[in-house]
Image (cartoon, rainbow, N blue to C red; front, side, top):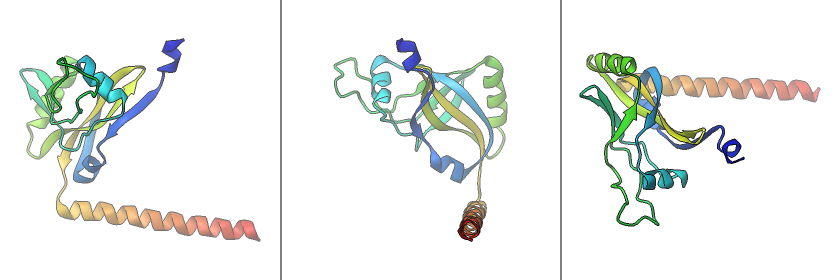
Length: 162
């Protein structure tokens, strides 16, 4: 019975700014090595991916600067809020990420932190930094799409009214 309740995806944190600052090339879903108090804190929906990044060190992927606040009912076993956390990926994925991230302008950023079927997962992306004019262009395109959708919905409402 308890297993059925945990099915699905429960979003904990999302890094919306990453999609604005970077061009996403490829995404990966990976597990996290967490302590008990970190899991409890995440289940309360408290986390921040704002300054997070992934670094490949010694053929292992590590998640840095992700803020998971201390568990309020925790004791001396509590975790530090910004410790580095190991990511669980296949060897081929780590090798591919390592080779691509060494290219100029490429980085690995976390996009979302969530629970999937009761297990903590993080979606990471191989990304390339955008220039300032690219960011403005993206915002302009988004605004144009929004205006076009607004006009189309107004026309449809007018047609239904006749």
